[in-house]
Amino acid sequence: MIDSTIREEFKKQVADAVREGLYLVIPNQKKTHQYYNWPRLSYFKNGIPNLSENILSSGPLDYKSLFLDNEPIIPKNDIPSFQKLLSLVYSNSDLLNKILPGMNPYIEENDIARSINHHLILRIPVQIIDRYIHINDTMEFNYEKFELIYEPLANSIFLENLIVDICVPILFLKFDFENIKISENVSIERMDDSFHFARSSLLSYSREIPPAVLSAATHCLVFRNKTIPNTNYLNLVSFISEIESYPLEDINKFFASLRLVTGVNSGYSQLLFRPINWAIHYRGNLMPLEGTSIKAYPVLYENYYWLKDNIQELNLLNTKEIGKIFTKLMEIKESEIHIAANRLNLCYLRESEEDNILDAIIGLETLISDDNLSEMTYKLSIRLGALSMISKPEGKNPFQVFKEIKKIYSYRSAIVHGSSDKNKKKKEKSFSDNPELSISSNAVEYLRMALIVLIENPKYRKSEKIDEFLLSYKPELTD
Image 1 (tube, rainbow, N blue to C red):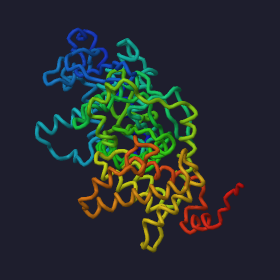
Image 2 (tube, rainbow, N blue to C red):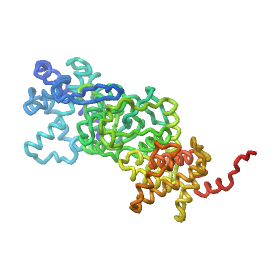
Image 3 (cartoon, rainbow, N blue to C red):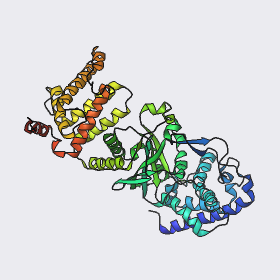
C-alpha cells in the first residue's frame, strides 16, 4: 500500500506538471502534428461495421507529441515541474515499483534506460495534458477538470483490485434491439460509434485476424462488475493481453446457448476490458478500453464473409430464450453437459466435415453413454430415440431417429477406422425427409436436441433414467 501522504504529494506534483505543461502548449500548438493511425468507421450495405485506420495524419492533434517525440518541441527535461515529479517517484521505492516495477533507483542506468524510465513516468502528466485539451477544449488549467482525468490513471497505479466490464463483440450477427439483460450481471448491448472507435485501436495488434472480421459486430456480450488484480503497471498490461485472464468458459457457454436455441453460428475475435473508473492510458478523447484478440470463429468468416448480403438477425424473443438456457447452463454441475456443450461449439468452428461429425458423436456419447462400452451404436440410437419423444423433432418419429443415429454412427466408424467405404456411407440416402442436411449436420442437430432435453430435464442426465423412461413409456393407443 502507498502511504496516503505520498499519494497526495504525487497528485500535487502531477497537477503542477499538467498546469505548467498546458501553459507551454499554448505558444506551440501550431507545431503539433495529428494523431497517426486514427480510426475510421464505415458500414457495409449489410449493416456490419467496417473499422480501419488511416495511416496518414488524419486524426485530431496529438499534443503528447510536443513532449514525447524523438526531437520534442517542448523538451520535457527542461520543465521544472516534470523534474520535481521524477524526483518524487525516484525517492519513494513503493511508488517507483508501482510505476516501474523491479527498478532500483539507486543504481545508475545507462542513458537509454534512463530515458525510457523517464518516459514511462512522464507519460502520466503528458497523457492528461492531451486528454484535458480534447475533453475540455481549453488550455486553461482547472483543478476539478484535472481531477476527473487524473483519478482513473491514479486508480490504475494505486488500487490493488480494479473493476471491469468484460465485453465480447458477437461476430456477424445482428439484433433487433439495443440492450437486454440475459442473466444476473450478463447482458447483450449495442456498441455505439464511440465504443467502435475505442476498440479499433486494438485491431493493429491482431495481424493474423483480418480487420474486417475483428470489426464485424454490432452488439457485444457483457459480463458486468468483474474484479481483476493490479500489482503494478507492467503486470496489469501483461494480464490484459493474456486470453486466460478472461472468463472463456462462461463466454463459450453463452455461444453454446446461442447455438442450442437458434442453430445460428457466430463467434468472437476480441476480448475487451471496459475499465470502471480507471485507465492505464489515454488516446485523445477515445474512451479507455483494453483487450486482446482470439480466433474463436468459423474460418469461412475470413473469406470475404463481411460482404455477404444477408446477415442473420435475432429478435428479442430468441435472445430471451438464449438467456434462459445460458442461465441454466451456468448453474449445471454435471461435467458431461459442459463437455458436450464444448463439443457443440467445436462443431460450428470446424473446417472438416469429418472433424465435425466426430465432435458431435463424442458429445452424444458423453451425454448418454454409460460405463459399459458394448453395443454403443444401439444404445446411442435407442436412447436418442427416447429423448426425441420428449423434444418431438418436427417430421421425425422415434424409429426414424433410431435409424438415422445408426447411419450416423456407421459413418463415424468408417472415418475412425479409415474405411475406404466411408464415401459410400456418406452418400447414402439416409435422410430422405431432408436431403439438404448432410450426415454431419444431422449429427449436430441431434447433439443440439439431446443437450436441450437434458438441460431442461435434469432427471434424464443419467442414462439409466432414459432407459427407464423408454421402458415405462405408454403410447396413446388408437383403434
